[in-house]
Length: 111
Length: 112
Image (tube, rainbow over all chains, first blue to last red; front, side, top):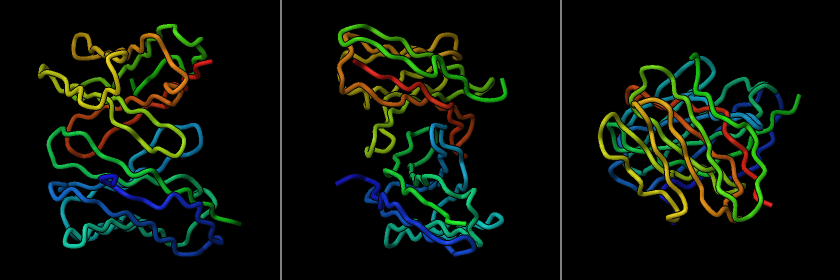
């Protein structure tokens, strides 16, 4: 079993929809969680960064962490075609420890 | 520089040859990481360097893989006697705090 599990998709939604992307993890030591967005043939870029359980909002994006169930979510409101990309979730225990990533979910927002 | 720079962006090599991939991190970033991304496999950790500490090599898949970081800045990932299964995108990232990495655009390695 991978430490971070993520449905690979693809997930297709119409423009304007609310998108929910989810991951589960198994390592109880994870304290920090992040979401990256990766466009085709580009490096991943950091979208959201959260510590421990709770919600964090940034514009149209909300990251949610539930440590009790080891569940990580990213919500995208009013999705746009420019949101079409692969979304990677990751977790790590702290300091400069390596981030363990899921395999990524490919999202397509249809105009 | 403004971002993490990786070179070459693409590399095609023959099976059995050695290759060197270069990463130039963001100035001042003390931590540097190498990951490998294969189709359907996600991001696989290879190695990381933090300041003057011994590198964490726990993700290197075999002794054909090695990496060094000179002067706390530029890093080179070397793959000896390349195999077809080494074909992947090799991503470098750097960081100066806990708030996530900045990735480069990667080197796409194809072993023929």
